[in-house]
Image (cartoon, rainbow, N blue to C red):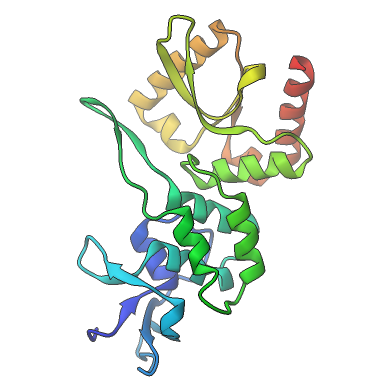
Length: 248
């Protein structure tokens, strides 16, 4: 690569660890700022961008890459489902809370919601309507693409919007656990069970203890899998609606 070239679009999203749906990853996305000419070559998908429509930075791996916010804006022409654009925005602004040997560690987000908003004022973009909708619906705290899909599926079914990444404490103020989505006043938790919950022994043990404690404290826990989110959202909505009616 030349000094004026940088990774962008899907390739940048992969480098930033953003949650992509099924997209074309057969080529590397390499961009330049005009008046440089878009690169060509086997395995390369070249782009020429206006300077006002992109910001770049040095990735921790040493590559020059479109910033996380610019990468999200570039995906407006590639990612078709609005839920996925929201999930990517959620991932950009997420402040991860990681459990380590010395307790919970908070890591900085990739970028800010202000940076996402600024990308939409730089100039005309393909997919601007979808990006604006995604920006309106993004929320801090969603740690995975399926969690965002659960939240938006529930809301678009006409149900109240649950709180994202809700911490639960017992009557003595002792931390019980963090639930993915919650109607805290009604003590309803929605937990997405990804494969790592099933195959990682430590995570599985923590989940069992947390869910038992939630039930002891009067919470109703709705456990959701990939199949129910993407293949049977109607059943997901039915279960949440039933819980809300029972607790209201």
